[in-house]
Image 1: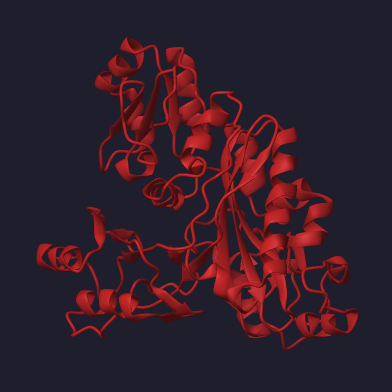
Image 2 (image 1 turned 90 degrees about the vertical axis):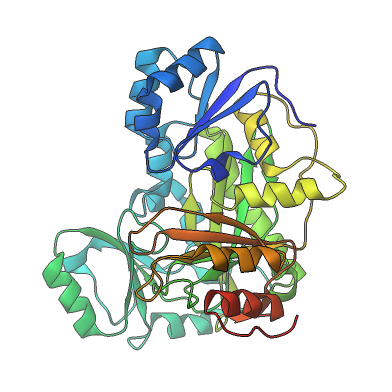
Length: 412
């Protein structure tokens, strides 16, 4: 069993985020739903737990306020600096930070005030022909993604679960956005259509450890109303939807970005989201999550449910943050999934009897007391995959929908 000789207190409003390993004598969790992490850190009870144990502090996502609270109290905060995380995650500063990797991995892009963006014609583009993940792309393909008829994606500096992303289908739509936010800096990219994937990555002081690629379940009704919103992960689908060379390309991308982060002082987890352009047959970087990704806990639990051949991503995360050598490989998994029912126009709550039905059917559930639009209502976890193909649920996935919609599910 993983253990650390240095006591650590994980402070979070969502206990699930901290359960990549089981709490124990040297790993403590302070969690309270409805309270933000800074508020929890200011509670006298939290201060007593940290001080009495002479513990280091770990949080899900660092920010300047958390850093200030820890500094005032004389606590060691394990998370990488909030300023570095901001530089990497921010859609605008990220392009400059990536340097040469931006032209290697991002879709065709331009960063400018919204008023200066142009829907038609060519944008400032990467040399896509240099990317080699299957050898099928040539310069003759580039006109398709750069043509006036192509859709565009506008991203603001920050977003969460797709809320900072706008799909532009026409020049009129762009003009409407320009009238509303003329001076806001934005990143415009060519629209990429195809399946998306995510991978959790750990940066230690001397190596990059790449986790298991999962298919990212995005914009799927009835789980969300937002077409860009991530609602889950399926670790069984990546091997069927990606070729071996594409899997290797994603791993190399993760290593390249991780090495750049390592040099800049990053330690511990981060995640990347990528998308496979089905027209160009290419893999593009879509997102860098400079923090512990939300899928970390369940990936780690799936890893520990196997006869371990290595360590989990959360164990590697904690070791890296504590400055330890990470000598074991990450345990490989190829099955399991989780999906989140978010608050939608038609779904405002999940009744207890529905939760009971899901658990009787063999699924683990975690309920949340949220009411805000697109916030989490219930996390549903399966030891087996729920995706049959891109955008298509298998029998287990349909069973979950059937229970949520109170319909008779298809057989597995």
